[in-house]
Image (tube, rainbow, N blue to C red; front, side, top):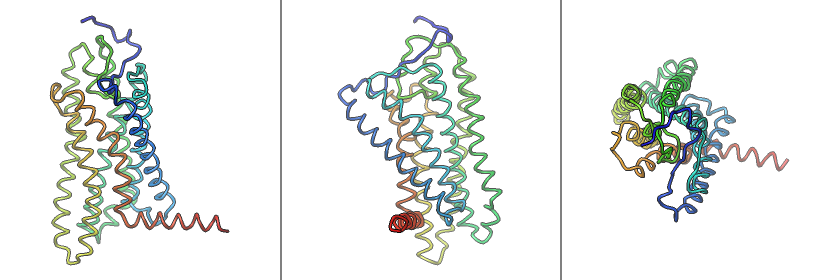
Length: 314
């Protein structure tokens, strides 16, 4: 195989779904709808929580931050995806690939930690309701949110330049939908042993550890819910936790399989579908999970809608 120095590589070719040329137009339409619905759904959540003073509590402010991450995920992935589907193959510059990988890591790490902090928030609210205002005060909330956003910058700033410091081998075809670390790393023609050790360790810390803490939190929450004397209280607690658990299962499950898999673990098509699950499906479903299943969000939406109607009738 002909070797190329990294300095000579100016662009990559994203293969996307080029194995299924007859489906390109249909997939373009589907992903365009997903893109628009995701943007509108998450924008609605951001606006509702920002404008409704009664929702300025940790639970909903965490959801607002989650929607901001989901909008970012969508903005990083979807424009290139739509271009790829309209052209069958799409080229992306070296700097563009670098930026996409960097921001994908930013969004992914932030979502991991946000979902973890949301589980801790539910644990504190359900298992320690009387001391909840002290446990989750404004200072603690701000520290948890800042940790979620700052941690991502540290991870992305270390990992992305490291990947692009390796020499790449031709052909320059990335058999994936976007510049994610595992498929880009397959083009490297150098020893990546220490990077793989770092990446595996980092994934354990970023994905597996928070996921384990979430499971432990929900085991404690489950026991606390079962001890509640009120059926209504149990149903409300179960509903709140079910929304969060749905997001956790979808995001962590597919992200873990993507970043902790052996190199030959799955076919390229399977890897693409798993990546779509946590970069596109989770941001699409989160607004439905957190708004349609949440009575406070629905009341706030109706309140804002009535306020808008009243202003137009004046």
